[in-house]
Length: 526
Image (cartoon, one colour):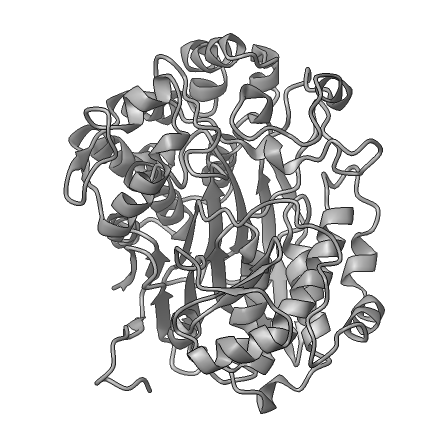
């Protein structure tokens, strides 16, 4: 039990259903969907699409999603890959000929075809109960009526408004500036797009006037995108990847997401005596940082479009973790095995829902960097993701940019399973941090016996680009000890990531929702 005299947040307990996410309105509409007879899929879609209006710098209908789904009355977990592909005209050699050594992040070259809408349509059709029109109704309403901008969202918006270019500034700024807390943000043209999707399904987005607006806008910005690229977009049902940590199974989305990185990192950490380390001490943070360096090095070399990846078994192998764990010096920081392929991008939303029948959804949905590419379509104001920045231009690399290919993604939903039964859907936002965040959350729960809310609240650290970011929740003494080990310690300008989780207590039948105070959101139940 937490100390009620200290700042903190209680978990949310409910029996019929819970949604945990990063904005209260999204949690509210998800619960309303459950109360009206919808299931966890209907609720998850309703909440997720609304988050594109509540937190447009984080996500939107120009982005991608990944989903893990546990059907009601079953123990199996399905994975839905809702990530889009590069346009057929994308060519790494042509980009290298232009003098580029890395993928651009804020041009049309970085824009992959959005995959989330196709995935939401498929998810609703295959597993929903209320129908797509019902799931999209709340987002349509709030896109027109407007959403008061929440404090953390306003702060992020103000920090990243410079990413917006051209038409995007017209749609995502108020009188030329980022909105202040409490100002109302509206997106009536997105409401029109959602109405068309509600009536015509995926064709309302990937064909006709909406697709023509996106293609014309991207081509005017130098992109190679075509209507055929959009019409060909299709999500895929796949099998999750799994690893076991001290009797608890970590279930992750397979590549092109980085879920295998979290499993590898957990496997490395299993060779250290974490329970006898202070959970908020320097030694635990050091070992975790070193494990992350090794796991992320593997990620950067191997994870790619599954059709081009050949080393997944190697990453998941316990023998690989044994060899990597042996490289860690418990008293000294190593040089990073390889530069991380991206900075810590914090622009993602995560949402989880469990309903009364114990269908569970773990869903992550993003435009990648803040406001994605910073570009938007001219008529409907659809903000384009920049997932193409996840490609490499290294010739012959499995993740080399190419037309029709999916880039390596940082976004990963997860679930924990014990004795074959799902005990907790969860997710951690924060771009590159996510795999590290999954391992941190897992070890907080398993090694230190923390409740999911406590595990989320606890301070975080993450090594990126040669610096070890250590949140203010750590003591100055811990930071000094880490510095003495050779880490370049800094206090991050912004909180590291965000997280949500729902614990399914089989003994009592009660659901326990947890939501990160680093964000504006909450868990709600009924």
